[in-house]
Image (cartoon, rainbow over all chains, first blue to last red; front, side, top):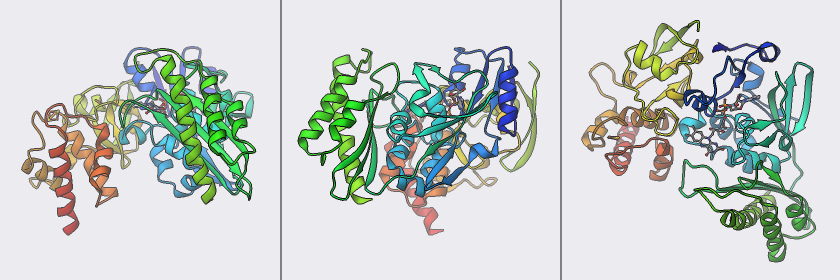
Length: 286
Length: 158
Ligand SMILES: Cc1cc2nc3c(=O)[nH]c(=O)nc-3n(C[C@H](O)[C@H](O)[C@H](O)COP(=O)(O)OP(=O)(O)OC[C@H]3O[C@@H](n4cnc5c(N)ncnc54)[C@H](O)[C@@H]3O)c2cc1C
Ligand code: FES
Ligand code: FES
């Protein structure tokens, strides 16, 4: 295995694109190095992107924030302005692992690792986050929900690197929230995760909503019917019941040692409802 | 595999070493530099026994490559005492008997110091959440939490 730590994204892309063998991007390494040490992957080349200055920054952009792909979770958690604008995204990122893991793990690593249970992904999908991808054929922007297709698989082509994530500006009276169910209080993999993002009008009626679920299918799901259940309502009990039903209906989970199918389907509705209630409180205050 | 040449600042001293590209910082510290304070409990980021700081950030050294430390600053448990004088956290761990076998202790101390550097007056809940990535199979967590609280109180007095 070769280890390279280029100083520019162009050289990182070139290194990855030219490699004949198995090549991987290294961000925080909290997934990659576990797999490497466990012998699950045998890379020929690892390209560390943490020396690329532009990827290590959080930059304000048009009222929102562009988060460099190499920014660790701990740094995002220490950024009061991002936390204020997108509390749901930051709370999801802050659920990843321990303080030690937070010192290294990135939101983009969480996304590109392509686990359906990745905590920050439903929150990003609900937020309508957009990834900027740089590759041998130039730059493209794509919605975060178009990156992962199934466990461990992404739509990124050979040589492509996610450079940053844009968390856009948001209208007044907007709020988002992320909740996960785990059997413990810390350090566990989501059995179900739910991200909800809403915008209210001046009268408190929901005019836009996005609902995303994790760990209930082969990838994170953006659930249109769940959002539709909220739009045009004041998130009263009837609307929240409909939201929960739509969220449960969208699930196609597996059974495993951490949760049965039936349990996951039920909990998805419960969590979507609770996350919507938190998002509502935040929207009313903003 | 050709080895990587690394220059890093370790506990304040500029240190050079050669390592394999896939070798962890934990293995470099223990096997090449004789700094055996950081322990390998799991090797997968779960136990915190290998905790060190990298450019001031708390990390698991089992999930850092030795090569990544080039030009960076690493602090380990070996850098915590000043000569013969123990850090207040170390003293309080002894006073409170916050250890038995001691395997987890360097990790707890490094992690607790990182907390107190950021927040000199953490609540018990904050301490417990901060240390959730450090596992202890012998002592239980109460004595450890008391030791951290006591050390923090003493350090606040200056
Ligand atoms: C103890 C422990 C606890 C954990 N707990 C949680 C948890 O609670 N919730 C959770 O969701 N996850 C958890 N994880 C998993 C992991 O920490 C997260 O998925 C993390 O966000 C991964 O980010 P990273 O920067 O470390 O990724 P890396 O390991 O560096 O990379 C992950 C994958 O993404 C690719 N990649 C990284 N960056 C890019 C990029 N810019 N462009 C293209 N591809 C890229 C890599 O090649 C690799 O395949 C845990 C891990 C550990 C070790
Ligand atoms: S040895 Fe590194 S976390 Fe357990
Ligand atoms: S004292 Fe033995 S593991 Fe903590």
